Image 1 (cartoon, rainbow, N blue to C red):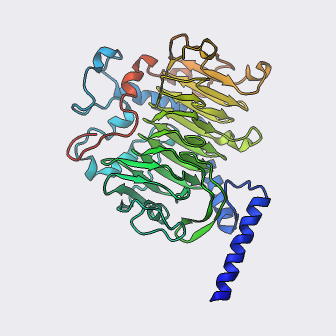
Image 2: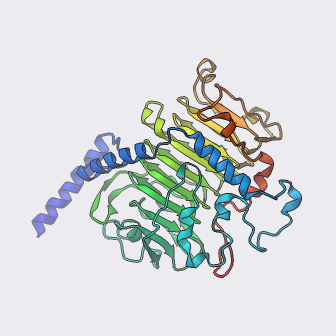
Image 3: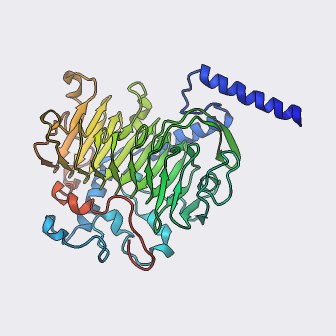
Length: 439
């Protein structure tokens, strides 16, 4: 027994030394074994299957649902007298799908029917059991304690994960999620704070809803369980709030994120079919990175929707910063940036529709867009377009490229204008949900 233990210890030390000596190109995977190789293959297949060859159909569908949800509502501020803690008022189409049901807590999985945009069809743990997190500790990375969040997210079956009570969870290492999971913080105050990040690597079909993530930091790594039948060596994590690497069908809704060591949401390595909605972001420099390298053309497959989010105080740049893919930025409220709001390189397609952009006082930072390290002779051909956006305090959006057309013009549906954003983003961030009444 002692010899076997000594052998395993030497193996771990050897692997740690190798991880230091050799650059790791597999996103913090210290040992890229057969399990990870198979997951990578499956993730690439899932991304190809999820890719929308006609992305404007998703654009049109979302815009149509917004118009339908807001039918009969005036876009002006005089209709905002209604108190936030008064009777339930759901304006945007995602919220309207579930939020005013007083029995939401008895039908939590209804949420899985409500995703729009490129993440449409993401169901998370729908059809699986409800798993209640009862323990806010995170002590054992290889054999997590039953009742903890780490235990729940590494199970093989679909699970709808909820929380017994208000919790602050300090992750001792990054939290590795398995596929087909929902993290649902409705009804309680769940804070992932002061520890490791949430990592979605080579997984699919994930919903993260109604949690707060802040103050995450890099963690040194080590042996960490990533599924019920596998654990392995991880190198140092980045300290994002949520990191997506080769992930498909992901919906992040009604979260808040701030003050993390790296990005708030980083999406890289051919992740696709993603919607980020109804969320509130504050106090951060590099907010969102969509595509990690100008040399990684695999990110051409990336398709992401940003809808009904509030980009608030203390944000500097990258809301988002994009490479290669197709990005629909629709009906978001940009109330502050210090350098720029939306940036990119490597010819991404960016369609900005019905957003409100409030520029800072700094005359040198009025421009929404920033083409990173690229000459105008190159970026003039990139498709960056603004449609029905509202520009405040001198904000400007420099368009480029030709028209984005893949469907008949008569079938196009214009977005709701930027004047509607105060309604559509009014409840961005985690909701205060109580049983017996709408959220």
